[in-house]
Length: 111
Image (tube, rainbow, N blue to C red; front, top):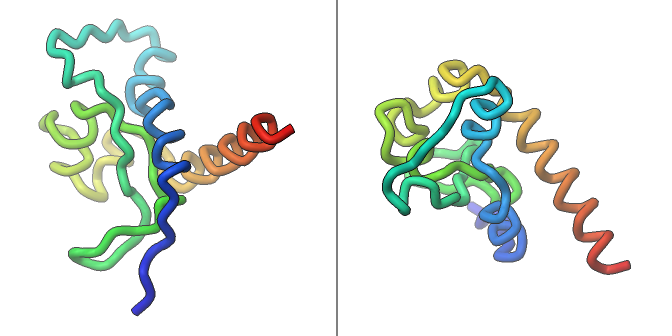
């Protein structure tokens, strides 16, 4: 079995993006106030398809704050596959958009 693609540069870029759930909530006019500094920290969440006990490719990661990634009752770690329908997000569209944005940003950095 081959190892999933790893990219520290991509993971670092992901952690600089806004949490996809918080961004959606802000767009809906929801005011977000995190009272604990760790709750607003953005993490690189591996959200692509993978087998049990395995990680997907780094190119299948999205930015989720610690709250929405691991801590909240409706976090990705708690809800698993139901997370996306619960938050009304299209996981694959987000993955595709993040990859497109990363490569566009990378081109701007190189030029």
